[in-house]
Amino acid sequence: MSQVPRSGGASAADVFDAVGARYEEVFADVPGQLAALDWLVGCLPPGARVLDVGSGTGRPAAERLAGAGHAVTGIDVSAGMVRLARERVPAASFEQADVRTYRAPEGGYDAVCAFFPLLVMDQPEVERSLSRMASWVAPGGALAMATVPGDVRGLDIVWMGHRVTVSSLATEDQLRVLREAGLEVVHHHTALYRPHGPDAEPEPHLYVHARRPC
Image (cartoon, rainbow, N blue to C red; front, side):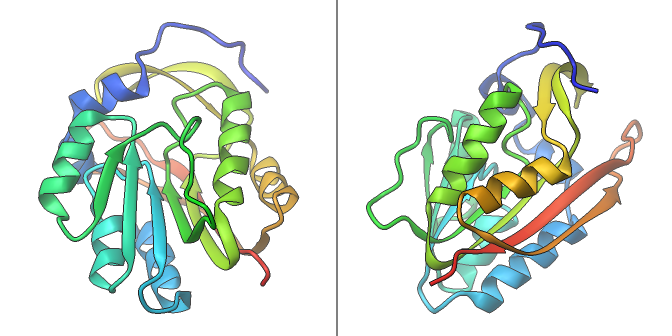
């Protein structure tokens, strides 16, 4: 059941500025994310242009992709995360930007990856942002994404010690948006993941691999 929007949560920028490097520690070695990165590296041509949406500290996504020889641009709403990423992954380029307003360069990207960047926003923004990301994938390119699925709108939760208001789409709606944007979904699955930390609860993660036909 969809939730009624509420307004008690902090912004994504404020939350991730505060969380900083702890995010990398709490969400380290996520199997589905590592598998998605392996898939991207395996299907991209040498020197591919890759956009990492919600790049965080730059690890593992930007680090893995830049290490494979790709030209990686990371965007994140958190200035603190951008600073960390620039320090930790100097082989990639990072900028503070919001997926809801970011303007992709002409021709888009050979690949877009997005691991959990669309949760701290309203449900209509989630759908529009997912469609925007899909539109940035160039012909023959790929998209790898992950989120916590569910028909949830404006749910107030406490996450890593911070009160945030989250929204998401059910799995079938996530896939529908990608297909309507012209992508072919080649793989998707949901897995439970328990973040590191004494108070962490298992959470469902939806992983999607998609391609844009040439």
